[in-house]
Length: 163
Image 1: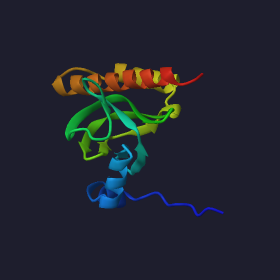
Image 2: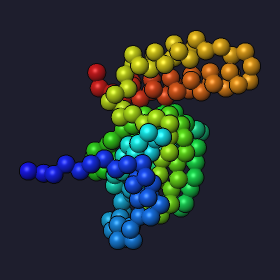
Image 3: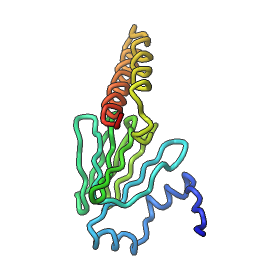
Image 4: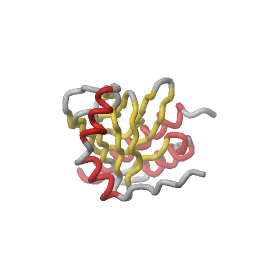
């Protein structure tokens, strides 16, 4: 019988992000692995070790392998992928920021949803909501553009899901 492991709190995840143990870091370096953590305002969504992380930056995708130079980038709404061997874990992230330091990729985003939960219906609902937003001044135009980008990102993720 296995003992269930409780989900880490946001504080525990942040502590682990900032103070990863030297043993863990050396082990990941030795095996060419990358640790990826995804944190939203509500909770730590993911803390996993993989071979490669593909980030949806606002101006294109960036693949991160072990040994990458430090980096901070702005995320756009889209698909974040974690590759381990032939397996791929996919998430929809709603913008935010990514930091690469050592062999750790930290993702801070407003929303992170497993890709399998993003459907064409949800993407269409997001698009309809974006189309319904007023665009009368600079602030409302910016908000509408972000909502449209979010709906497009959701649609791209949903299109990759098996039917």
